[in-house]
Every structure is written in structure tokens, then in C-alpha cells.
Length: 469
Image (cartoon, rainbow, N blue to C red; front, side, top):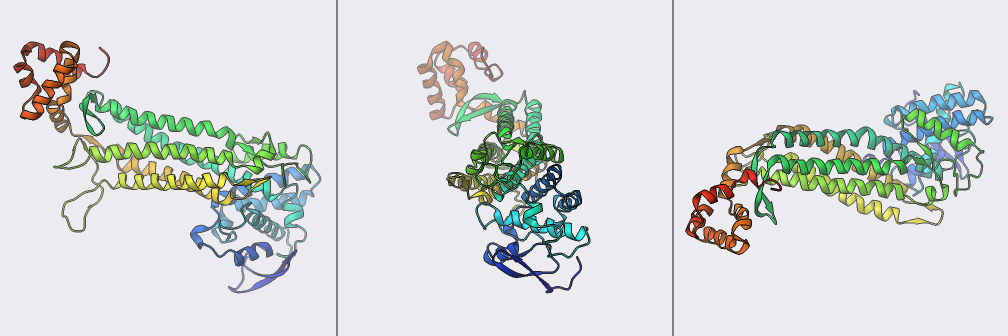
């Protein structure tokens, strides 16, 4: 489209005529929404992934509708126009201006998509944009559909794509790096901590194996939610009954969506549930929330273990990525850890919004869909990018401060636990308390208590305290 800025054309909907920018494919309904919902600005636009999901759906519907009598010429034009939506080109050019904060069903964004594809199809057929001839946004692009089944289906397409192509690879890579560290440090003995106080020894590798397994569990949770995400509401139309669609339409259309997306989408087993609730998305964000909790714990541990360099724990040496202070020369901060923990806090906040939105499905339709979808997609994006950044700019470059670790092992009073099987808990406690009070070593106090040196040397050996005897 090539027009002067400010030029308009007149389009109409059931409420009457509207002036629409000449250089945009959207029509009267989109224009009304632009004027009525001036909320949030550019950063609050309906997410690109949802619009691309709508493009996939509209392409599949046009091709399926041809099998049920839609003129092949119109079907082909709609399908080709949808390709420009799927590619993201028309989103990037500004043809999808609507905000998240609109109707809770996503109706305006469905009509935005119908109008854009309709006018682009008209243009491809050599017609006049805005004429609704020979392609009508409702009668042809939206044929056999309702906003109430298309918008939730687009959400599922977008979320499934983001989970499998963005989040899963990012978490897997971070998991693999943590696992590699656990192997690298399998023989590096350190002192454990419980309640932030000294505890018995373990290896640094064992500690990191726990972090890696947290992410293994996180990946399993993602896999566990996908079957519900792959269920599409398409075919339920307005309230779940399938009014104004044809028998077999849903199955054929969803099969085509699966082919176009490369993901195993299926028809939802119950359209009434698929329209009235957003339980699948709440479940997805539950998995994201647990992942955020895991990452918060892992990241904070690494941050504290790397505290120092002189006056902290100093067990780990974190990569020095950038100067850390505008006033303290030479200071370097654990910025990757800080970024990740902020991401986790944001995801936890998003979870509250998703939960409230999911709980507000009234009667036959949930009307918090844009809120839910945008928060789920934002959390996926933040976690995926955060895992990549934390992995590449921190985890891969972490080094163990073996001298500091060995020093702490030698100074720990909790090695006294190894004496329990030989002299009992209470006598062992007396030795530990005496060493702490007098500023002496466990060995010195143990010898004072009458334990032979050779016995102490045999019993108190950190390398033998790393598992069952």
C-alpha cells in the first residue's frame, strides 16, 4: 500500500461509517477499538505471537472452508493474505495496533485480523481495499468461526510455540551447563549449610547436581502441561455448541493447523470447557511459577557463594562482566544473578494476574483472555531470555575457589558429626562447643577429651562423609 500520511478512506460496520487510514488494511471495527481503548501505548499492543497464531488459524480455516464450499479463488486469496500475518510482516508494519486492554474475549483482535486479511486478499485479487468485495471479513475470513473459539485457539498456538521453541531449549541448555559443573566439581569437597549455618560436608558437584535436577523437574512440568495446550477450542464457535460451523470442520481445520505449526494440536474434547475456562493457561503459568521459584533459589545460592571477593563466602568466582560501581573503583557485582532474580519476581507477580484472570470465567466464556495470554507469553519470554543470559554470561564461566573451600572444610565445627557413631551425640556436642568457645580446633578438644589421635584421624575424614557408610 502506498498512500500519503493522513489520507483516509471510509469503511463501515453495523454501527455506521468510520474514517480509516488509507495505508492500513484494518477497517471500521479496528478503528473504533483504536479510538476507544487508548491504553498503554506501543508496549501494550496485543502480542505478536498471538496475531501470528491467528494468521495460522485463518489460513487453515480458509483452506478447510474450501472443502465445504467456499469459492477456491477466495480461499486461496485469504490463505495467501494470511501468510503475510504469519510472517509477522503486517504486524511489524502497524496493521495490528490494538492493545491488550480491550474486550476480554479478544473479539476486537479477531476482527482486526479478519479485516486485515480480508482487505489484503481483496488487494491480491485486484479489488478495492475497504469494499468488502469479493472478500468479506465476517462472511469469508471468519466463516465457521467465532471470536470465542478463534482467540483462545490462537493463544494456545502462540503459547505452545513459545514453550517448545523458546523456553524448553533455553532451560535445557542451562540445565546442561549446571550438570557439566556438577561433573567437573564431583571431587571438590565443601561445607554444606542448613539454616544458613555450617553443616556437614558435601561436594560442590553434589550441590550443583541439585540445581541441575531442579531444572530437570522444571522441564518435566513443561512437558506435562503441553497436552492441554495442544487442545484447541476451534469448532465451538460462540458458546461451545458449534453453531454455524459444519460437521468435520473442526477436525480438518485443527489438523491443518498442526501441519502449518509443526505441533500436535487436536480438537478440544469439550468445547464448553475450552471456551468458559482458561485452566490450561493457569496450569502453564503454574509450571512457569515453579520454574521461577527454582531459578530464584539457584541464582541466589550462586550469588551468595560468590560473595566477596575478600569478605564474603568466596567459594565461587563469578565472571567479571562489567564494572560494578560508579564510586567504588574495581568493584564487580553479580549482575546476571540480579537480573535473573528480578525476572523471577516479575514472573511470580504475573502468576497472580493469570490466577485472577483464570478464576473469572463467568458462565460460557472467560473474558480475561488478553490479560492471561499476555502475561503467560511475557513470562515465557523473560524466563527463556533470562536462562540464556544467565547460562552464557555467568554459569559457564563460574570457577571454584578450591583454596577457600578447603579452608572452610578444615575450620568447620560440624565435622564433629562424624564422631556421633563412636562417642555419641552429647559428647560430640561438648567437643564442638568447647572448640567454638575456646577458638581451638575440633581435634585439639577431642584429644583433651581422651580420644586418641589415630582414632580422630580415622573417624573425622571429610571425604568419607559424603554419603552412606
